[in-house]
Length: 134
Image (cartoon, rainbow, N blue to C red; front, side, top):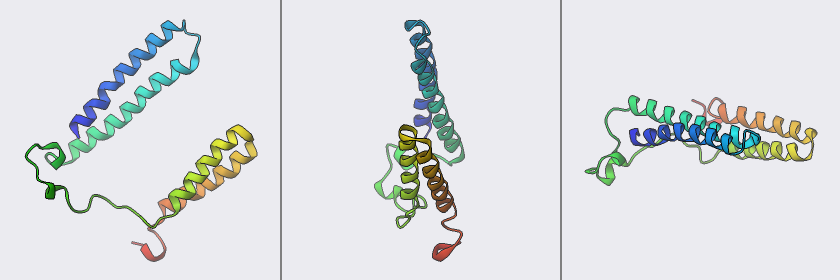
């Protein structure tokens, strides 16, 4: 993960410099690009920080980071996934409705935001009740 984190952390100064150059080229009149390019750098910083903190937490190299690794070393459980969960669909419908509401009207946005909140709560507490409670 160290290589991935270095790639994302390298992008941070690139996007910040490009944002300043973009501002000079547009004579500081075009606000969307001036803000969007440095914010892209900040998003790369968040991803790079997450990957570097995970790289420090893990012991040694992952099998995909080593040249002498065998295929069977990467087998086994990779994480906790819920293939039967419907909550991501509810959350996606809420997000799509919220974006639609920004274009059509605020009343659609507020209804979709409520659906999105229900989707987030359902997804977070999915393993707290029912058949799959821990």
